[in-house]
Amino acid sequence: MKIWQFTEQAYYPAFEVPGAMRVTLPQHHCEPQEAGRLLNRYLDEYMLADELGLNIMVNEHHAAATCMSTSCMTTLAILARQTSKARLLALGIPLANRSNPLRVAEEIAMVDCISGGRLEVGFVKGAAYELFMSNRQPTGFMDRFWEAHDLIIEALTNQGDNFTWEGEHFHYRTASLWPRPIQQPHPPLWMTASSASSARQYGRRGDVCATFLSGAVASSVFAGYREAFVEAHGHQPGQDKLAYLALVACADDRETAFKRAEAMKSYFTTAARLDPQFRNPLGFNPVEANIRMLQAGANAMRPRMRNGKPLPVDGSIEEYMDAGLFFVGTPDDVYEQLVRFHAETGGVGNLLMMGQAGELDHKDTADNLTLVAREVAPRLAELPDMPLEVRYEAVG
Image (cartoon, rainbow, N blue to C red; front, side):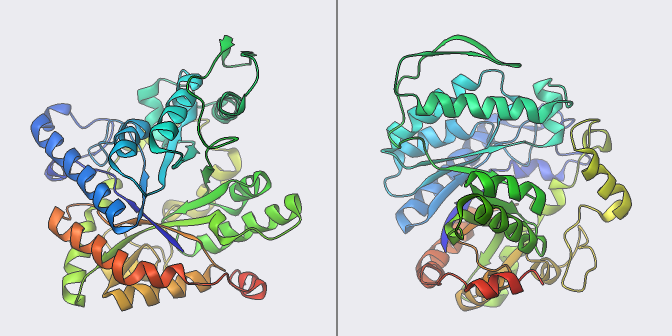
């Protein structure tokens, strides 16, 4: 199992402001010098991850105090120059919100060249509320996504003459990518899934499939991916094709680890603070997804604990651990929890670790990353692939 350090780079001084943390939060609550200090601090922690032998993941969101990273590729361009070993993952780029996919391809190629070929790229649908900043129509959203996806791949892989593109959503008289990426035919591709049905389409394609904070649902997501991968490619995927995102709070003793987890917990409580009119714009989700949500009721999107009950937003650290969203304790504790999760899901090759979240300060973050890198990562790297029979037992 490989470990990727990830932080949403929050402006946590705004967490004390009442109300929503996204879209409607007035920007006068942001003090620019403090934002700059925090952004540079997060870059320092990413550079520490590189020194420790961890990989790096960056995401992006917009109009949100919970995430100041407004461009994956801007952050990764900095890190491509300032790091030397880590793989650099953009997870992800919300394609359908982009007005110029060819510009996205240019940024990918440029960062891959600067990094010496260490870039990995994830294309994502993005958050529903971000439609209101990009001014895109929610209907036909995924048609736009896939056309942008195909155009970017065509630009990255083209080694012949320049080409034209006349699609439904995008039109280019000439497409010429300078520079081209080092990694051929293109940097590794990642996608995100929250259900077995969405994972299946990525299994057919052979892209890396990541699921975020999905707890028990991860087993069915991975099973759907494996099933489709075998149908399309004739063999089982390696565990490096599967990834899971969760928070990790590690310390030399459990008391300190739980204090760190409490500081990180505001990631969950602030992420839930969004005005209802921005949660599910008409046409953004497939009809079948909306039907499932209506049938399941108010707790449809909440992760489940082992007893089947929905996880409360204000649940205890132990409840978040039980749901598979948090791994907390000494290095031995965290290792054992991850080994258990690895077995329960039939095997996962990548841990997308939020080693910093919420209000966890720099000192605690640095110690957290150091302990994981030195005492947990080497043991996880030796985990073998799960036997096939265990993979299928994991989904019951």
